[in-house]
Length: 296
Ligand code: NAP
Image (cartoon, rainbow, N blue to C red):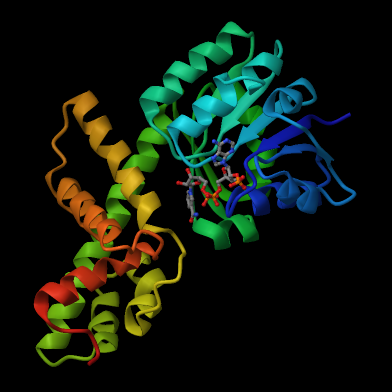
């Protein structure tokens, strides 16, 4: 019999990831705080548990996909949490984006139960989760990575083992720095080009062919052009992620000066009531301070 998989956290990302595992014929035990979501996804093909402990008791591998460190701590170490049910030889795979420091603390608690942990945050957003094409950054032992690899291959198109536990989260923080700072840079370029009389589409077309071209600009260009800020990836979540990056910089003694500025811009957007918009809404701050909306 194959490994039994527990899945906790069936939100924008976790829902489709769990569905893909079910479609690949894995036997799943699901838990979601709002139970109806778990029941809807389970259909006739999976079992729904009443709490994370029950998930752990009935699985060999437990995957978590939750918003941030406090929620992962609660689901693992809280009452009726995963740690109460996880047994010898089981594997916990946290795919949420959380603090690498908290990850290492939780891995020690998991080890005290005779189980082990991988941190495996993802990039690729909702489309990547639905298509099973996520990029997955994995920290933990080689052995656990190989054990999990068939499942990573269902949920993603590229899983990279980057080092010991906690390093997956470090690399995800690196990823989030590059994405946020690129969105900010493209926003500045578009407003400058547009206010000086060049169509935004022409700016992107010209930049795309050279060194300034990037996957971020390509993925976000239509959102910029159309001022379509439906998420996508919410401002609030990216602000959380830059907070993780800045805390890691403090922990390891690394200066992240421009990350700090963009972190404050995301904070600014939240204060203006735009926390639920796509992170490409950084453009609106440059537009407002420049008195110019691109394409106008
Ligand atoms: P989401 O849609 O907000 O889903 C969060 C899930 O966590 C829901 O199932 C929610 O349950 C559950 N939850 C929240 N608080 C909880 C608690 N205290 N106890 C138990 N369960 C709790 O978030 P998401 O977009 O899927 O993001 C999940 C993670 O993936 C985050 O770390 C995010 O940074 C990362 N990520 C997201 C994207 C993206 O594009 N969205 C891309 C890459 C990485 P309910 O259903 O009851 O609310």
